[in-house]
Image (spheres, one colour):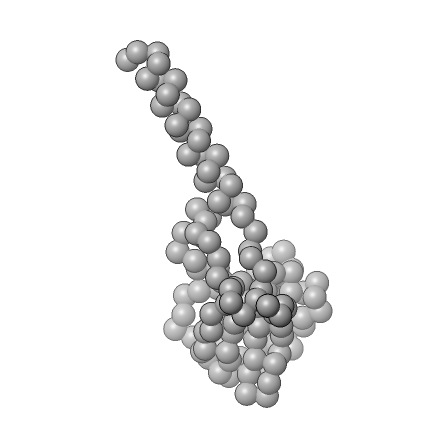
Length: 127
């Protein structure tokens, strides 16, 4: 194989890998009403898997709805689990761009959470 073809293939591969890294490191967009969509469901559990994040799992839903660094924001995970487990909630979820680290959008960042009693959590900005 000629050397110039290998050089061009190497450059193309490098560009593709660089693009994937950039897409993987793209931050979650600001939480504004225009960037969010609504999800409703019954809470199966509230956990903190790692990194001080808070995960909200809905019955019959494979997505992991999470609040980034939620414990640092003062969320008491045990109290939330006791309050929300088995109850219907409404989540405002931030739309994200595709990422190679989460190709199917299984990780969904939460901007707002409310239940029958009202607003439980929000980081929603005014547009």
